[in-house]
Amino acid sequence: MDRFRNTGQPDWDWWGRIWPAPGDTLRRLGLTPGDRVAEIGCGNGYFALPAARIASPAPVYAVDLDESLLEEMTSLASAQGIDTLVPVRGDARDLAALLPEPVDLALLANAFHGIDDRAAFVEGVAGALAADGRFVVVNWRDRPREETTVGGEPRGPPTDLRIGPEATRRAVEGASDLRLAREVDLPPFHYGLVFERER
Image (cartoon, rainbow, N blue to C red; front, side, top):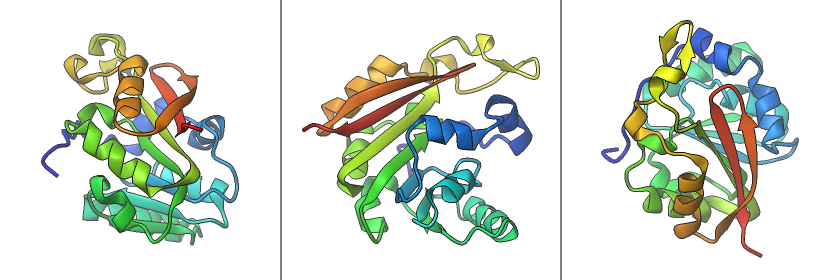
């Protein structure tokens, strides 16, 4: 996918310092049992695996372009006895065509800053949502990279790529019928925005 600037796949220890309880974060963002979920850019499953535990028995479609990361995630799911996680390889701009059904919640974590054609991406996500579906964007706050340190080192995307909550809201609302329902502070460095269809 030539319109996504990947800033690297952190290891689990790294994520664990920022997100020690990813399941709790997902619940704060509104994920509930029975929600059909698509996690876009799932990587090796740091959020997809706990999402599958929470959403069960509904499926979690874990979408990524990287086959090796999907294989790693699938192996972890098998080892943990999770059988509702469905790996999907493909471009999220075609999300509706990739998924076998509409989803109740689409999650994009730590990646909105890397998407150049945001309008096409948001249109793709909106088209994959059920009528009352939600789109959740989690991202780094637009603080200088040298201020977001983990283990004493600056972490996260470059400062010039970061996009704050207001700019994210404008991008999503400007490309779809989704409207911001609530903002969730996710310390120390992140925010979460929950979008729902305009009624």
